[in-house]
Image 1 (tube, rainbow, N blue to C red):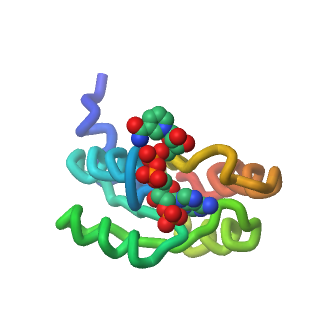
Image 2 (cartoon, protein in one colour):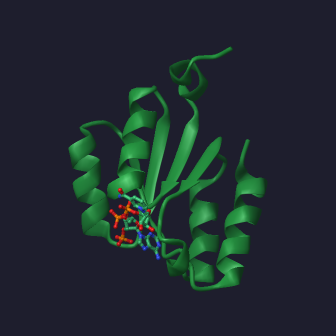
Length: 111
Ligand SMILES: NC(=O)c1ccc[n+]([C@@H]2O[C@H](COP(=O)([O-])OP(=O)(O)OC[C@H]3O[C@@H](n4cnc5c(N)ncnc54)[C@H](OP(=O)(O)O)[C@@H]3O)[C@@H](O)[C@H]2O)c1
């Protein structure tokens, strides 16, 4: 069986909500394990501050999970990935379409 570190090494991990709290911790664990990490949320200042705190190379992307177009554009910018973590409050995802887009995006773009 692969160890956690081996499983995530060189994998592309996308964390929606990765600029603070649980998402930040998930992103940090993934970075420690050698993953290529994308953190995403609404506020550029929070994304930049988080990226600085990591002290490692992370891609930052703006997305509003409550906005269908924003979610669609986000998945197109990010491209293919291996794992997706969404750690924002479920009730903040206002639109059922946005939830569906998360699932469709994950299916379409996951390697
Ligand atoms: N932390 C805990 O110990 C804990 C324990 C149990 C349950 N929970 C639950 O877990 C969830 C996350 O908690 P947390 O502590 O990680 O929260 P947090 O520190 O407030 O982080 C939330 C993250 O989600 C982003 N975000 C919020 N709304 C968004 C949206 N519409 N689109 C994209 N990104 C969005 C935030 O950035 P922006 O605001 O810049 O978008 C931030 O990066 C909550 O539902 C919380 O109740 C947390």
